[in-house]
Length: 274
Image 1: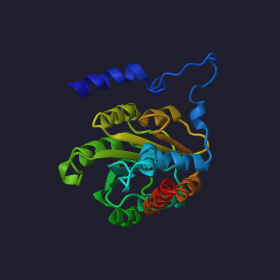
Image 2 (image 1 turned 30 degrees about the vertical axis):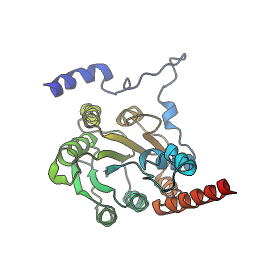
Image 3 (image 1 turned 180 degrees about the horizontal axis):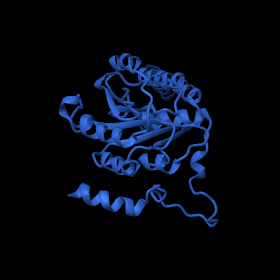
Image 4 (image 1 turned 120 degrees about the vertical axis):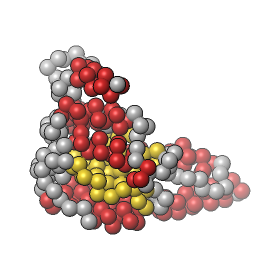
């Protein structure tokens, strides 16, 4: 019943083009309020943001461990991740496989105990692998084929919710929060009216949705903004796939972070004793 009510109410609130998903104020009514989300930040800024918010490095924890702790606590937030990868016809084959490469690099730099699952979508959504350990996930990403088609984002969100997050047979760990990372180059074009509602349903499970939007200028930016759990911590922009690779390469691997923290703690202990 709740799903039926929301399915009827959300289109009235947001409209077909979802342009009212986030309230914006501007004195000039001729200015498109979504223009600012078209801006592509410097790669270093995006890398720091991705490391902090998606990978879950907590600045507060880092400061505390330098000052008060004698051992290194868990630097990364506890969660499992789901990659939702756009395989639509607007993406070139080589760019698709560069996106896969970027996800392999990102996964390889993360915490050992994290689990990953992956979905691709074009005409329909396909689960490529259930929740699995990091090393196996890197290998599984390499095997994902490119299947060109339309952009059925809503199906990917629904499959993610039903078949991965709410399905105990998917390997989802009870009590471990989930983070979804969507990589796309544009708006949906299959049952588009369902896309933001599916995102809403997914968020209601406690799942955070992060979006990496690829392209210098994206049509349907309002839908992409609406997918993300927030516009500051969960929305990322890169001009092209090479830009995505550049961002990921700037992120240090997890074991390097631990080494850095070990040295920082030791140096502070020596200074305190001096």
